[in-house]
Image (cartoon, rainbow, N blue to C red):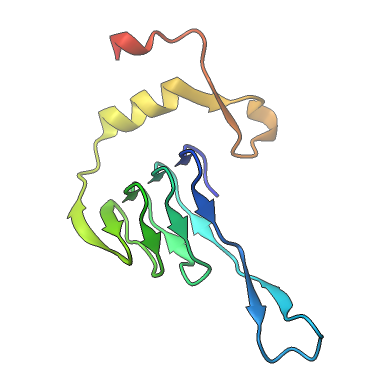
Amino acid sequence: MQPYVFIDDFAIVYTHEHDPVSELKFWEPVIVPKEIASFVYIGPRATIAASCKVIGEGAVIQSGSHVIENVNKWEIIGGNPAEFVGRREKNEEHIEDIKRLFRPTDPEAHDGDHRRDPDINEEEI
């Protein structure tokens, strides 16, 4: 997951599937790699199925959506199953605002974890 990814309340991102032909008594879990690019917003109660492997930069997933396919850069998708709703324009000024509002807690050991910057007055942005 890249920096500046926003996952809202109760959203679920599945990272495992189960192998139905596994010889184990209970189906063996299989890790599914995910790529979530920067400036993605995943709305509340959205579900990202294991079959969705890539969410492109700047994509928006609307609240309650069930995503089963990859999402292209700067797309807006929604519904169950999620479908194309529209496209966002890449806005460098908006991206800079996001970067100023959220910064890594430790820039030397960036792990994608961000905290709100207490020195920024959000009402001025």
